[in-house]
Length: 135
Length: 300
Image (cartoon, rainbow over all chains, first blue to last red; front, side, top):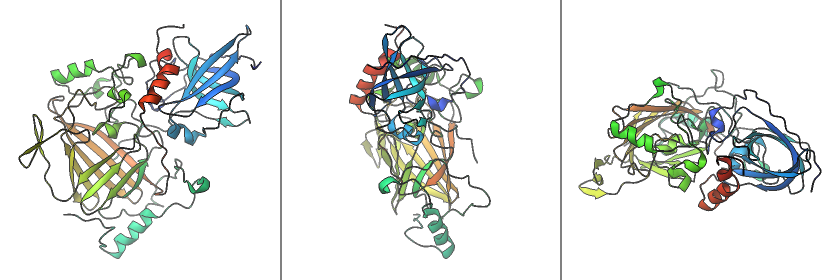
């Protein structure tokens, strides 16, 4: 098990997350506007529909391991942001920033990720803005 | 009957325009020849604008505002479901009751994932018009002398709009009346189309599934088997198509509602489209690992 340190910073900033981020299941479950930064060891990465899922083992300040589950959008949506089927591999040490769920469980959706090789990826969600009416 | 310019040349100018429209861009990531979507195209300006081909919709299209431009998480783009009075839809009493019975994951009245009853989450086909309002991304349009075919990215769904002069069926209680024969309702309905002018194609669709099977959008706005969907596809230049839609559903809404005017941008026809689907198995796995826990009332 990794000894990676558990780093959590909750930043109550307005992230200006657009509606386009909530494509599959809505934003009701998420604490929109908060960020949690997690450094840990990859326990799994599922690259599938309707959402990609990253399992990350994070060691807390009390020394206990907490398994976080972080989701991205579907593969076709996260691909342009650089997420691939082999972006995360078992045992990798990575850092991710997530928007956590409201109920306090160790779950969230990925806002950014720093991979084992140092590559930084952005929001694992849709991008772009709402279309403007055009005549 | 109108014919596609790709099959019957109508002049040097039109041919030139068509060849320009279909010329692939010089640069696009293409690992191993598998071309990926280019979501960073330069805008169409007066300097690079090329004329639209005549009577031709063929191409690989995607929202001009980028990869997320067609997501429509807040519902139909011209009336987002955000609680603002100006975006309230003109429900009939029945339509309003139906809306209240829908527990959507998006929009002003969104519920938690464990509380929703969106037919999409049971992998039901979205049908028309909802396919126009759910994560519209790379959308292929093909046409020949008899039809226009639209292939959506989501769930590899496709629909046919007939252009051979056949009549739009009449909506009846049991489905539609086609030349005196009663036919069943369909998720993608019965569509016919025609060219209003050389650059504007109009499609009409009736015969949708009943209101307990389909929604208008992801915020739970309803639609019924009485809906008449009118779409226009207007080529404003070689690289741009404006996709508009109006619904007329007297069972649900007291007047027609214009739902979208979405500019679409032409993409390289060789672009590979990743699968984007609803799988009951993967849906169940997702709910087990994330969805159910994320929406529970508290920490375990």
